[in-house]
Image (tube, rainbow, N blue to C red; front, side, top):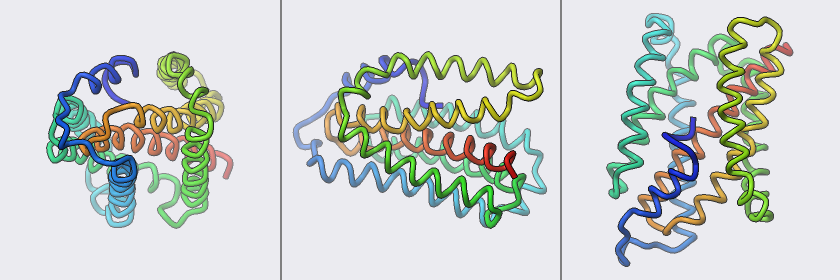
Length: 229
């Protein structure tokens, strides 16, 4: 998910970071760095999905998932606490690279990277991401107001996710809810990224939030298109 604690807590944490005048970059450079870091994570995941068939087949999926959670907790903590862009990028990698193996499990389950469900999920993820970023630019006041509602929705989705393990027939509806929630989170986290001091470190931190939103959206869409097919 997005990070430890609520969006309000994360915002307060980043606003408290000490920023020297020479650390501030232009808005253009800030957004280019943020976009490049997000793209790096997604490309790394795509490469892992393409070449990880043997790894996924030989390792126990439970081991991969447990390893991901351990490393991601460390990565999120490092990224959130660090004021150094290189250290934050290390934390970013501790999240995105193990997550690539988790994504690879799902991609393989739905027929591999060349299967129609995976391709459809990929196309829709790109389209929704672009739309939500543009919406955040065009309607910042809307995204400013929905942070608390999104956090409540995130808690609700986690509870419903547990229920789906025991109640059959909710998986498709649940996936639609997850896709809708993280679509809005992409716009919200992009809007929120523009409120912080324009430093490279903050760009990396915000890229991690947006990257996680995009991956969660992709996995939800993959379940939707996979079930439909």
